[in-house]
Image 1 (cartoon, protein in one colour):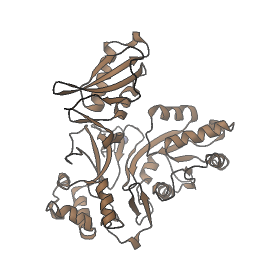
Image 2: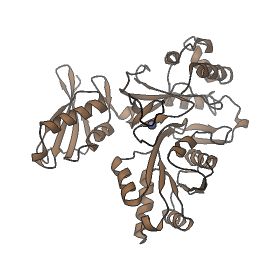
Image 3: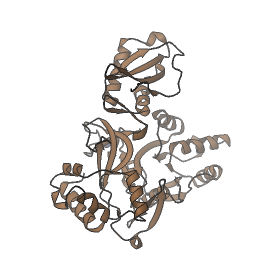
Image 4: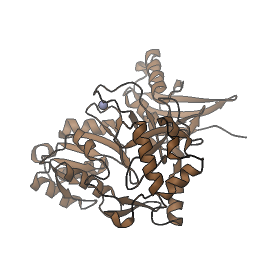
Length: 402
Ligand SMILES: [Zn+2]
């Protein structure tokens, strides 16, 4: 975990070299000496992604956030925005190696890296991390599913990095070609990010194909932010990163366990982002991890801030509603409905049980408990007749504002 001394040293470094960091501190009258404890970070305004984009446009290429000159960098990428992303010195610049090591990747592994190598940084992010762990990389990139399947098989690839849906697509293609995936392929480990990994898919991949899947969270701008340990219950915040969960309207941290925007401070010598607002929605898990690591854990990423609705001041995202019902196979269909009752917001969960006789007060209580755990909200649960839930969306906002 980052200490206050490390943070102050880093802020001083960035303040001296990156004009944008200096301006960010100046805007609230702060200097590096004002960092007496970690909470002092909160006094610095959050840098939203949109503002980073504008600053880059006005002061190309990096908007003044780079602490080294362009000539000292390894590569420059672009991500949607457009935003330019630098790769500075070092063999694992984006810090994914510890995440991959935790997922079991190591010397001699032959890994199919299916992230794109073109323009965006993801391909090189994982390539460099895998190489630093002495894995052999097949730089597969996106597409060419058929060729990738043949390479995986004939080379005996042992690992996969990419998005989970692409791993499924490769397996399906192998099966279409008449291969027995589990018997004829050596692929047994996968690291995925950048896309939702449903727990049902993780179980399916483990049970039916013998593939252990780990996931991480990062962005093109920041690299690795958090990743799963062997417990696979939440993602530990990575090294050189300070994560805050904040109210996006004010930039203030929310109470522990509540949902808010992920804001990261990156102790990076090339690209020192201070309080960068990712626009992603998550919460921090309370309590310690059985693995023994002391670093804070992210619950998982629920989605984008601008897709969420606010209920009694708390963010609720459709993915959170899905997460509640992951644990209830006895519920066939469900939908979260936000209503206004007097001056109060209500979140009502409509549920259609698979069999009506399984629905009882014990089940309702368990759903309410799980909802409370995930949303930090008291919810109402209502059983509805089969076929009542019409809309596809699992979360709808029915409030009328006059
Ligand atoms: Zn852990």
